[in-house]
Image 1: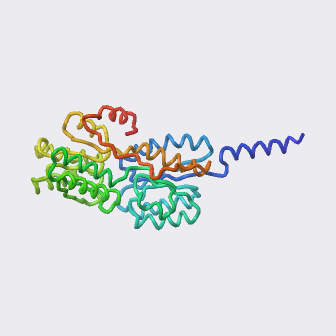
Image 2 (image 1 turned 90 degrees about the vertical axis):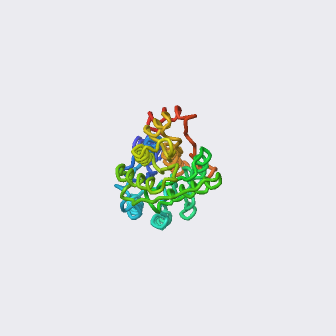
Image 3 (image 1 turned 30 degrees about the vertical axis):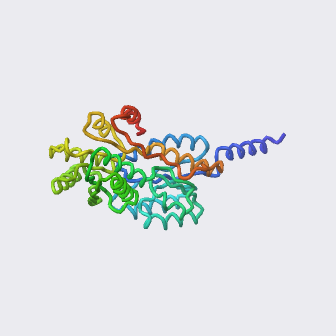
Length: 319
């Protein structure tokens, strides 16, 4: 018996079974300073256990901030390609910057999955699927909900002007509110205020002082709802201005529980990170695909009627 050949054949089989032909993927996200991406990362981390068990690897890449967002995202896409990634999972917030880079990546043989943002762009670069909320439908649901609760003029706050998912959310809010008989006012603040609690609170406060007919505020991030809550409290408008937000946090859910916030719109970021990572890898490794497209993880309205179940998910770092 030729033990050398046997050992070599065994080693080759083992390498093939664990994916020695690398199925390595890059998951690209937003700012490292944005707490929302911790929820995405929880899903990515759990999916990475499956990826690594099957011989692959996951590189989770974030921008430092949102100051130079488009070029920074392009740089991360090009970095992933240069490092030999077989697949990229990425939101497409800024198509003008990202779409050409993703087309180039796809032409270089990289398989792409969209998540969180970019559902409308995915066909341009042959994305496998989209995992996330339909931003427009989520906005419609939020605007309609607040209007049905009695809001007559809703202020929709965009913290990163031009980001397609945020602009789409507020467009949805506007249409949903209009359908239910309410008006929407969209305020866009400078992107350098993103994550700035004090600066954002002052900006929201200024809008509420300037227009006393605003009787509801909806933010597009949980931290921004904290800023709005502070502004509303400082102005003594807790009884006259409703507060809603996209996404959740412990503080958001606490306010819903104690009646100082009306609602939140959950897009289930844990599932976005988990599904985008695991399904991209499964396609590369096993050739599998989910037939349903897109795969929607939201929207879901969280209010006083169901807040307790959401609180348990937040405690585990997944909502």
